[in-house]
Length: 225
Image (cartoon, rainbow, N blue to C red; front, side, top):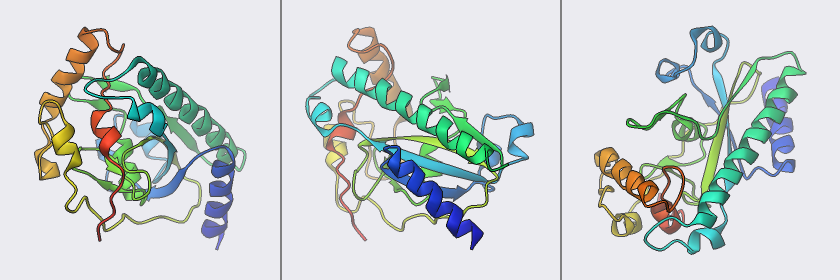
């Protein structure tokens, strides 16, 4: 009962702060993958996953390369998520529990595209979507048109379960990808091909960091049971 009540109150708090997606994941099975100190990980077994929708209008402007407007929007959304994660962490700490906000977009190994942890894997375990062919989390309502942030915690919360969904017969991202990095089977995603294209965009000074947005634009969350 306490876990359910805490969950509902925290979700209400997050929605009022402007968050679009909320879920809680059991991270015991994936903690060993995190690039976070054992001192922190020993204290926590749950992660709160928060999602914020991206602007459809800004995404629609993208054609065959990321735009400066998308680049600014991308950074603004990540900053907003980090601020909400801080507020959620303070909310939890005031109740006497541990909360560690993990940055929404802080890559520590660009070549292997590794951050402190995988926000999309936590989002998957928290029931926010499935891992799509585009190697991103796909939500039934928003597709891949959102960004994520995670908070590690020992707060007593109800746990969500992964969705039993996939991309079905939608192959829009395969056709859109400029380097054919996306394959029919999500497991065959070409990480290096994708990363090389991101580097090309950055070298062309189209944007100032490794982002694209082309497959995000076309992923609208076609829900197939």
